[in-house]
Length: 350
Image (cartoon, rainbow, N blue to C red; front, side, top):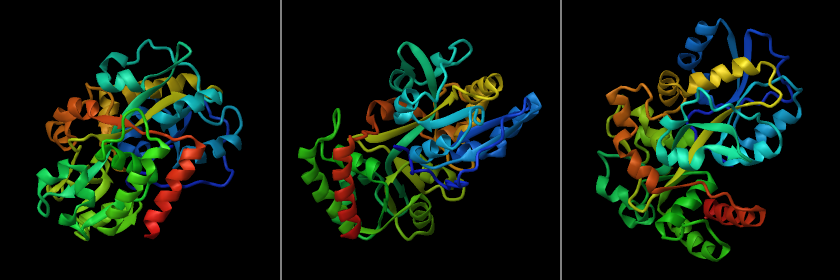
């Protein structure tokens, strides 16, 4: 987030400098997030087309770019990338234009279609496949659910010592800014003193700050009752075992992330890559991706073949409101990013 390090169970298995061999006609090489490694997603496609999908999981767009610099043309076919990073990926020449024919663009949730369809210079390069939120996750048996709809609960004395902070500065700074009424089109340096003040308050009242697995585990085991920066990715997979695991988009709004899929400009197997993109965006593919064993999140296709129970876990019926009342990640320029990191580091050490 410039990639979501928000993801549950993500496996950053970077195999130092090792890239796949040029794809055979019956193989597809995909550079993806961990939700695409689920056999429940891959096997139906492999069986239908008589092919093998070789996946490489990565964490962080910077990691992906480093891997691509060591790769040869034809090594990779499909790329799954953070939506906010698509423009720079296109500028770098990594993605091929996509023919719109056969892609379910009209079925994408309107608010996502309007903001996340990646058309540059009149060409379509990537399509949103999945999205979600960095908001507030909680144990409904331990807290007042109405309180969770106010971001200010994260620095309230009412839940002191019962909060885990998801340790990723971009969404959390965005979330605090929203709670303070500061987030409109972006965040400026002038607003950082107020954000810093409330980050420190939040840290004083927290039990821990940690990565995705750490904060999710803390919520599941009862070590904390709230995750600051949580969302469906942290709780949906837990709901079948504990229906008290909940998440909500606060009334002030939340931070929205999205991931997009495209085909590499030098793909070794572009026709099969295109078929895979169509499959992932289909109602069946979307349902399998949304409920991946790695992490759950909203499918971008409004016709995803999910059950009523699965839709309820993802807050399907509230998505129109959630989308309208959320903002994509605000990615600062290098100077402001350094300021973000300074106050985040100070908060963690506080």
